[in-house]
Amino acid sequence: MTLHDIVETLDALVLTGEDQLDREVRSAFAADVMSDLLAFGKAGSVLLTRMSSPQVIRTSDILDIAAIVMVRGHVPSEHVLPLAGELNIPILATKYVLYEAAGRLYGRGLRGLIEKVDSGQRAG
Amino acid sequence: MSGGRFRVFSSGKVIVLLREVRNILDAEVLVGEEKLDMNVKTAFGADLMSDVLAYAVSGCLLLTGLTNAQVIRTADVLDIAAIILVRGKKPAPETLRAAVEKGIPLLSTKYILFETAGRLYQNGIVGCVEKVDEPRVSL
Image 1 (tube, chains in turn yellow, purple):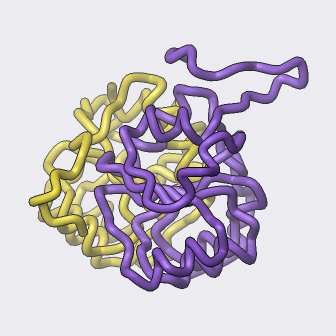
Image 2 (spheres, rainbow over the protein chains, first blue to last red):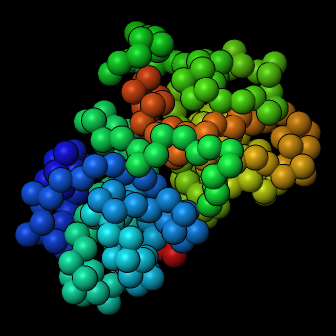
């Protein structure tokens, strides 16, 4: 699935990264707190979130997250977008709530970056 | 949609039993074994209490990584049907006690939130809200 497919599926606005919509994405995950992003984020995955602090953008850059999807109509503050642009991280904004966005992307074939958390694994 | 576990009624609504939710998610029932015949139509997922308070509605299934007793009290106030703890999260002892006391079914699944939502959605459970035009909370 490409970022373009995600834009289409979620009727999303492209806030940054218009030039990267052909990028292939492998998997997705949802995180609303930084500890989950740090514990689970993997290169090439799509982050579904309603977090939008500069730390989220910087952490996503370090983890090489493919794109950030802001759910339920959340739009980041103006000073976050230039940072995402500078770090080349696509940000998409959808009005769908997290559950609907995840369900629709799953229906189009996108899968979780891990399926299950093993009991031994850190569950952030 | 795939799965075939859901039934579509003449109203167009899909009803899934909590028992089926347990099977779909390979979940452990921590509280509410006697309530598995409960009907579930909608769900909501969030890891922030403020989002739960702002958007979850009566009768929905709450998917969350929140494990403190506050989530039970919130679910009770909002009349949430049942709580699914995702990512293999286990509740604190006081959370279990509160769930028993309030009679709110509490299940735990090892699937991450994205997978949990995807699998339930595939089985016909839709969001309790679909889209949000204007965020009601701005954090």
